[in-house]
Length: 577
Image 1 (cartoon, rainbow, N blue to C red):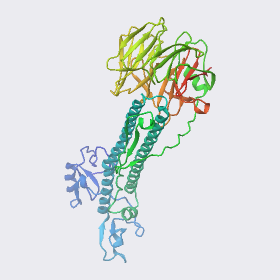
Image 2 (cartoon, rainbow, N blue to C red; image 1 turned 30 degrees about the vertical axis):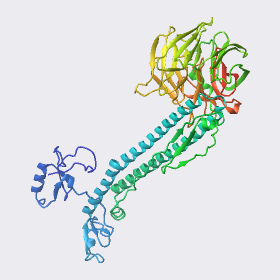
Image 3 (cartoon, rainbow, N blue to C red; image 1 turned 90 degrees about the horizontal axis):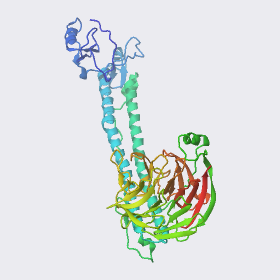
Image 4 (cartoon, rainbow, N blue to C red; image 1 turned 180 degrees about the vertical axis):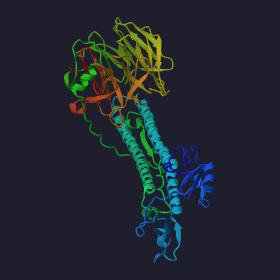
């Protein structure tokens, strides 16, 4: 009976057929004597053939692995098939009769080869089925710890800001110091978790290398190396241990004017032993400014509809036009423009003033607003502003008639923007825990609520500044979630979380090219993005002499108004040409 089919490795993952020619049955048995795969029917015929009666036929799973063919260095016509146990040297059958091996114990090399082959396969199986999956699970836990740390940090930030909200300007300095301390603690924790994550990367790489080593033994045709160098008891290094991050706690304190630091509480970190440890602040890394080339920007600008007849491009430099002080406010936390060349400017103490473009005060209003974009001007020139205490939205017409325009129920209205596309009002709201964006029409009818993405994840926590882009996108500055952008239907498009480890967005606006400009209170810069969320540059930095930008606004003449965090000096720049 002819056997002419090609040999198929026993470890291959495929349909195993009988070796007998013209037989397509499944292989069930294996002849260790002639190394043929056999079905049940062909097994019976194989044993009946002359000379095959004493062949060793076993189940396929119990087969011996066929030795790689290797000629004896002494007897060149013979193949190595025996191991001298005392000399630990592979031999051919004739070598057993030679001087030096007489009287020694010998082992069938094919049996030994099969045992070690199975040993390698078992070790590979352990690595694939246990060590790698377990390591990956632990690595995911480390990543989840990092996410939890970020969430805890965000919650602490919210608590700290709630404590600081009732203080005056003198609190800002202490708040900044405590926030920086928290930033450094977070950085330290995340760096430790990143180190643990890298440990698992290295360990998984080690396991992969170990698999390759075992596979090299399997593919080796040098029996000497395979039988003598491969140890009997192969040991795999233990999976690295991990430690859960010890997150800090924020302890609020009753405040008084004599000790501003105690008013905001203190940050402590508890380690594994329950001891308190302090983290020394580190220097903030310098921030580099990068610009897209004019050619790249021109390609993007071709897809943007501009209301201007002239063609504008992004300039690589920012030019200061003028600056002026705004009487009646302590600092500049939000700016609204109307169509009569007048500005509405607010500080964090609820002072809201209207000025001309030279800073001359026209009127002043006391509100419950603070460090939010809580006022806007409609297409008709009416001022719309929120009242956090009463949870209402007010309208002041041009003849100074004040009305409670919209009641927001259980939600605290924080930020508001009047659409220049259709006149709708976009309102960022907060419950103290979660946030949302609500759209109203001109008459105050609720049209849309935006709170979660298509996976059910919450988009907002504290949407304290809001604006609209030229394509109808709703762009929100959220202290916990970065810049969150949804389209006019409320579908999440993208989120931007800065260029460094931390990013604290505040004032936000868009320009006639669809760029998004947002103030970062961590790096004290203004970030410039395209309308798809790609970072273009740090538009204003401390190196350019810009101190603590907190609010931004762009008028129809492409003038960029920037309000600082600590003073009432408003600065105007040119950055489009």
